Length: 104
Image 1 (cartoon, rainbow, N blue to C red):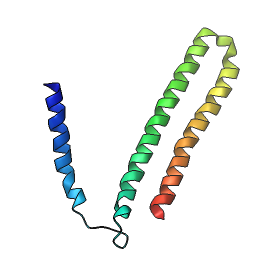
Image 2 (image 1 turned 90 degrees about the vertical axis):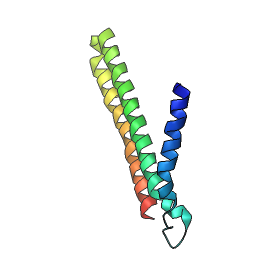
Image 3 (image 1 turned 45 degrees about the horizontal axis):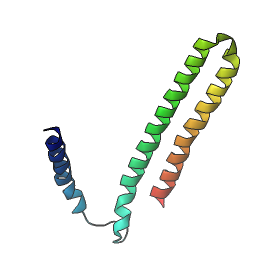
Image 4 (image 1 turned 135 degrees about the horizontal axis):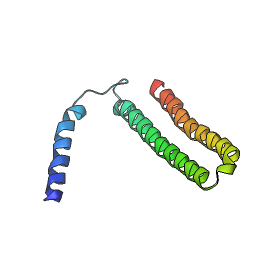
């Protein structure tokens, strides 16, 4: 029953998406230009979601390390902040690259 429900849900999503394919092409008639905003949105969503998961995992690991050894707080804190900055920079780099692709 669950598989049948998933089948009907995916068919409904495909039928609702068909008006998007009926639109005219942009960028001087090239069909590839219409996919750039969609790809940019999906790319940024994927990057932000995965960076959020990575930040959560890093914070959980640092919290567990502090619970096990409270005396190591300064070292753990420095590496936690450095790691979170690197993870966030990946999302920002993705945003900049996507912004440049959409604008071009």
